View 1 (cartoon, rainbow, N blue to C red):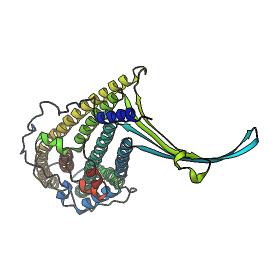
View 2 (tube, helix red, strand yellow):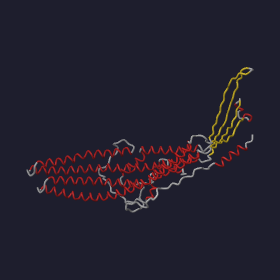
View 3 (tube, helix red, strand yellow):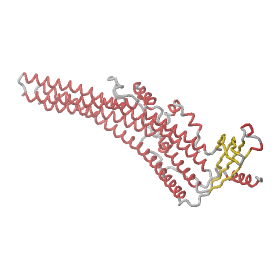
Amino acid sequence: MNLRPVLLLAWIVLILAGCSPHKPSPISPPENMPAFFSEGHDPGTPDLDRWWEQFEDEVLNELMEQVFTENLDIRQAFARVEQMQARIRLANAGRFPQLDLEGSGGRQRNLTITGPVIQDTYNLSASAVFEVDVWNRLKLARDSAALEFLASREDLRTLYLTLSAGLVENYFLAKEQLAQVELAHKTIAINQNILNLAQSRYNQGMVSAEDIYLARQNLAAAWSRLPIYQAAEAQALNRISILSGQFPDNVALSPESGLPDIPWEIYAGLPSDLLISRPDIRAALLRVRAADLEIGQAVAQRFPSFRLAGVYGGASDELRTILDSPNIFWNLLVQIAQPVLEGGRRAAQVDVNRAIFKQNLAAYHREVLEAFREVEDSLALIRGKNQHIQHLKSVEESANRALELSARNYSQGLSDLLMVLESQRALYNAQSSLVTARRELLVFHVQLMRALGGEWMDRHIQDAGLGNQGKRISQP
């Protein structure tokens, strides 16, 4: 048998391998990205490395480590990353020859002219099939899976950002409610003193019973606020427990530690830094590139496919002679398949993948715009809240002096109780608003840290065993 035509055809197929009919599309960020953020600030380099540690709160630091090790969302995200890693191996398997071993043996009884004959038959063969990746379809599938894997790692980084910010926000919310409880107790004490003063003046016949009822009304209102704040504190602590992978009622705060001050200067860097520091933006870009490779796969499906197939084996009626030369059989094939009539299915798949690419590209641009907006919003809120706090401090100071003066005048009979009660309510409202405003300012700083991104979570990913695996998979 002349094998030269078959071998020549196989050689030509191998030479053609690696050609791709698809040219990758250019991918760029949104046009006209601003060079600076509009809010006036120093565009220095922000310190994003484990930013919550700058609050110097050991309870918060311990809770954060517990979230990183016990949170169930993180466990799910790690499982998704492992799933995408397995998909790379699955996509890459098609690029290698597939080898099957097959053996059989049996005995059969046949009727012949001379009578029944019992005959043994044994077969042993190895068959191999190899698809030559002429149009890079299999390579594109592997590279697309690799990009999806890298995108899932960026999703994991984004989850770390989200959970860290969520923990700090709930932690400070719980602290705010605890501070509100303490303020409510102080207000109760003040209202009790006012009631005592009104009772004393009533006993002396200097005021009517109306003052006593008004004082009792204010005291009861102060007591009514307590359960609301206590319930809100419990809810925040319960959310922290869930973030930490625990059942509720496993977190307690120290009443001595109040809301901290902002420990750092405001630096937001440059808008272009977000393309590097934000993992959600990097994930969106990777998915755009993966969608582009899937267009290449769909285009390659419209071209002929080439396979090399071969079988080698032996057949005999005796097991010991199955591989003797006279019993050997083999074949070698070069298979070419070209779709002819398929109703436009492959062309439609190309159009589908191109539309998905456009969709992912628009999603990538939106991620960049949203990241820019989040930083701008945080900077604006921080500036506005700082001004708000300064005004509230002035209100608190004035209300405190007004209460002192009205209480003194009331004790001397120079004013009525309504002035005292109004001054007390104004002081409480100012103090309560100031506590809330300080917590909101902290939250706005947390939101800024989240909006700026970072890579501090890589240590936790490496500790979990995915760091080195991710480095071995390079971006196509």
